[in-house]
Image (cartoon, rainbow over all chains, first blue to last red; front, side):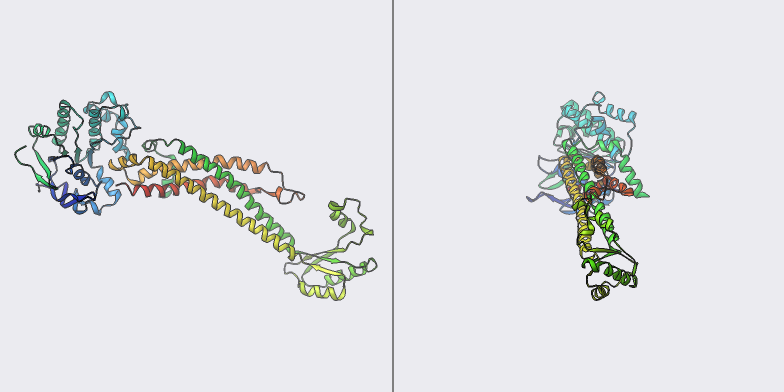
Length: 230
Length: 300
């Protein structure tokens, strides 16, 4: 599967497994900048694994992966760290530092890259995800939906070129899911490449009404472009 | 210069980067306590090492340039043999001076054992002649043979027989002191490594999150390294200062007290123990850095 323009993420015959046989195999993919993709498939099909391969948390057992034209397996750990500053990730379990308030957690990507968060911009970003009243709350005090929105704010604070979201609406009611989707669509309109792993077909249908999104499906260890049934 | 800047950055620190790692509770105090105890022991080991060094030099220096001739002869011949020995010594190359020990000096030497009123003149005490060598020294074997031939009651003692084991013993004690210092440093490194590993293991999830959001290994490592380096430094300082005070309170060195009252630092040697907190900080820096990077390699 290839798209027009300089690819931001490229997979070529990628395979991965956790020791009990391959989970993904022969995955070949090329995502253009500014594209919007949903990644779907049954639980355990390898959606999270695919995203982890995208930002180098997992290494493929076969094939090659390139991010912004650079092959991941040829990169040093520092290079991968720098690359991750261009890729925002909304993890399924959010991955916060529980001893830091939400404002500090959201600003963390800036902190670790040695930059100061502008207090006004930080407040605006947190307001954008609807968490103004939660600036000083610790992550364990937040509801699932609030955590997902805070994770989205942290993922975009570096103004990344790519946003990867792993089941971002998994803990949200429908109304909140639509609100989060609207944020993702808004980011895509700003030129960001978006990949959302989800098994929520209603969310995909709702998105297709707002944005030109393509749907990838993992089936029988392979990545396929889903058809019109969605 | 770049390295200096990095050390300065480590010490002055970045409060935000320090905050990303949660406080480690009791492990922190254990590191400080261990560093303080190790520094206290290191001060004593250093005092012992430097004192034995001074002692060895003193014994070696004081005794190496002197010798003694002892004349054991019947009272009637004692004066004649003493004169004869002094004449021989005056003609021997390598001897700077020789003088017979006066009865008053002999009495003073024996006073600690026999009391001050010893009638030296009426006792069969050998006559002693103190010999001072020139820098080139004299032929001890040749002089012994000549004394044996011309003054049968005279025996040369060049101090070598009892000086050598004393100097050797002082050298050994000094070596043991250095060994104790080395072991203290190694024990501190081991303890800091264990504490750092415990802190790193407890914060594995924090490290994973930081890696995922783009933190470089150096950034994550620095947060731990800075913490343990400062703990070791201040802990060692807290051990060094009381250790120095304890050494300062030891009785002053005196002839009567001998080695024990000479234990401590002298002059500029007081600066040496001040290096202990710095050495502890350096040891902690490298121990924590090694532990941190070992752990970080396991996190993608």
